[in-house]
Image (tube, rainbow, N blue to C red; front, side):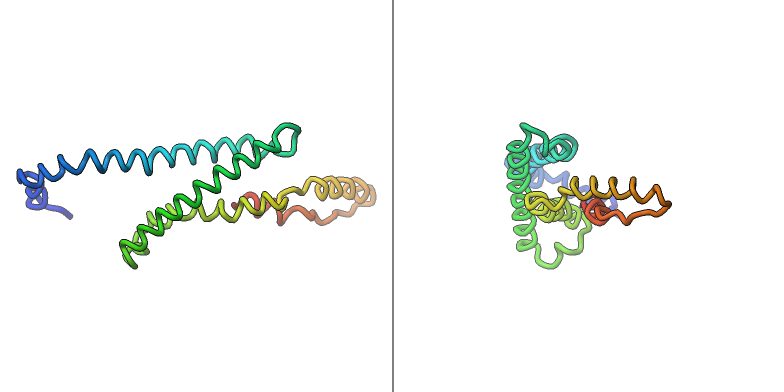
Length: 159
């Protein structure tokens, strides 16, 4: 726990001048290189997952699907590169902070999810329709079919 002596360091005129000089540069960098890209990334992510992904197979949304995938892919690599620079600068101390893991999980998960989406892994409509048809047939004799889409839907939900 910090004591009063720790805060006295910030009362020194030289330290105040250094902070007053450096803060505008740090603030500008933080806003332009971290905050704005993150807000664009999160807005794109939320729009994609809550709207475009759900209607991606409908007419008129094919191009929007791939535009959003491209934007999300770009930002994933952008944030991964920033984290790798931080890892290079901090060395193994980087791995001691749980915040760094939280910074890495979303882009890495999306880097896994996006190619699966591009290659149609989550397109299980035909399999789901076949399952429903089999259920209707088998329910007449009291049996239950195994859902072939359960693994795909589980992975989709996890990612």
